[in-house]
Image (cartoon, rainbow, N blue to C red; front, side, top):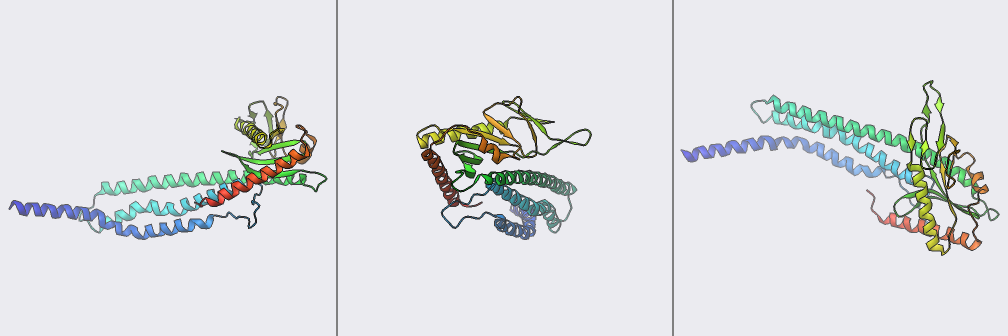
Length: 316
């Protein structure tokens, strides 16, 4: 008699486990669709590589890559989100087929889990939307500044050279301009114009030594990042060339009127409208023709090496 009770208890335990395992069958099609979505993610990789030895670097190349990643994240969250949020409800409906008595507390937990997942993926989609909007604005400003800098490129009468998205050891410099009188580190920052209480745009920014005072906020990082690029490039060029190379930082804020009455002289903050002319008029120092050509050569060499290193890394 005791053995019969143990056997009956074991059968009941097995049935309970089956009630939870068998509904997983209904999740297999959703899992297959999720696998297809992950496989199709590679279609969002819009990176192209040069067929020649020279690296393919355009203005805003780093931002283009980040924008591509943002669209990929939007694709995943937009397609996987409905599958993941419906999974608890589909599993619960599968449970209905294998149980004799419905537990409304269990159904409430399935509904609560689906609600939490809907809110989570909604926040992710909002984050992706804001990120894409911000990156598009930054890319537009990068292209505008790059187009302005291209006016420096002339035949031998004007020996200027412009590099875009120059990789350092831990970050990327937006633009590096080599002139006969020195090297410029050009950083671009895109900021949406502020709106006043009267509905008019406020487009004036005051530059101090350590911060930028916008109409409704303040920032220190753009100036810090520009100085960081200047310090790294000047030290790196001095190690490679054997002599100090004059390097000056330029921070471009497209669309803003710049108040430099309290600015520090080591960083030039401009709106970018006459950037090409300003860089031709400024003389951070003097460089011999040999050092000028060597700077261009080692920057080209570094860009080529970093591009080859990037090509060896598998795309995510």
